[in-house]
Length: 287
Image 1 (cartoon, rainbow, N blue to C red):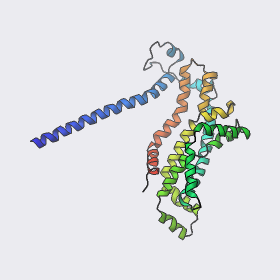
Image 2 (image 1 turned 45 degrees about the vertical axis):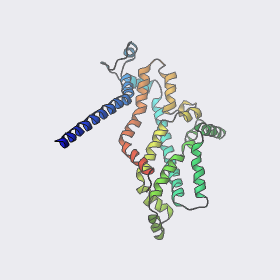
Image 3 (image 1 turned 60 degrees about the horizontal axis):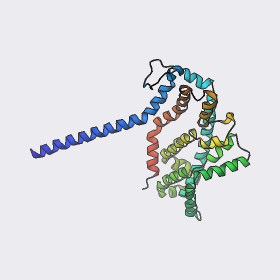
Image 4 (image 1 turned 90 degrees about the vertical axis):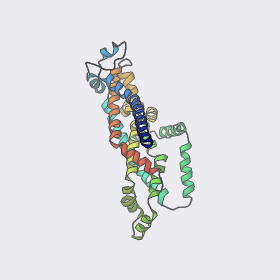
């Protein structure tokens, strides 16, 4: 009887702890999701209805899509989206090319001073971002690449962290595969394309997604290097929208523009979040 009572009490305790955990997780989820809900809610409120609310309302009985129409007509939001898409695609493609080759060189090729070079390479992560931005700004300005896609793209085509992450993933592949490929007369490039990249695809997909998110959210560098609206990205275009498009008081139209800008990244993350977690965990685990 005592044993059954102990087991019964243990089950009750386990259920109570699980219920408390779920309640806390639900509260945390509501806190995280509420800003997104408020953003969408505000974007479907009319300008008059929003300004007439002395106490913010958590719902609306008369939603409208006029704010979304204004987002594309009052300012060149479509142009901002197109510029961001071009910037993101080209930057990510070049970054992948550079990252894969650099990671392969550090992981598989043997050359004098490789460990020292890689250590110095990792030391670049210790340099404050502000110093890098200043150096890049001076360089791009002297090359007369301001207000151009080249000026936007070139400083963003390398990443020490992504090279390190992929290099660690490449290093996990058994050396026997590499030696067997070399015995068969396979070149390093063919080994990279036919063996390493297929095996390490989750990490490469992760790097690609993270770079896309990074490019889409890029703000400081585009803000510094472009003052021509023809090259504005969505991130620094938001400021132009606020100042020159809707005005500071038209919050619903501003929220509509923010929703349009945010939706692609939210959808991308929801589709690939499992691959992101898988790639990061694989990249940081050896053995």
